[in-house]
Image (cartoon, rainbow, N blue to C red):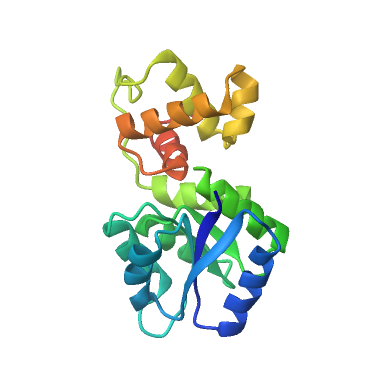
Length: 215
């Protein structure tokens, strides 16, 4: 089954370039386009994409507000912010709004394609340097963990093992290899731990681990 993608950018040439990149891959399909954030929720509802590539700066509703609206709508789509601005504030604001990844428009096509596939499979899309900066912003005002408190008490031993490997930035495939498990089994463990800890995605596992001084 093809991965369904929606492109949101106010520049037609950018949307056309991305569509050309994805058209070279049989498993990727662009199912909708929008030139502003105020049209995204209706478009996502109509096309049911796996991934939304969202520009940050648009004339009527910017990408951060549009991301927040998509997440609030309950759509299953995962949002990846796509911008020319490599600045911590953009990354932080987008992730706080519910985005699951961040890419630069200058990233090579192979990285963009790989990131879309990763997002659709539940992975996060942040460079190591960007992830470190974002974590620092999220946990900067974190309170000390009370003595004796176990933030992972709800998890099974296997889920704990998976949690720490996710927090270290490993993909499902890498975790499967490390723990000698099937990739599908790892995906199930990740889904269960996210639900039990009430975390939105893998990025927030990293943040949770840092907030609780577990890494």
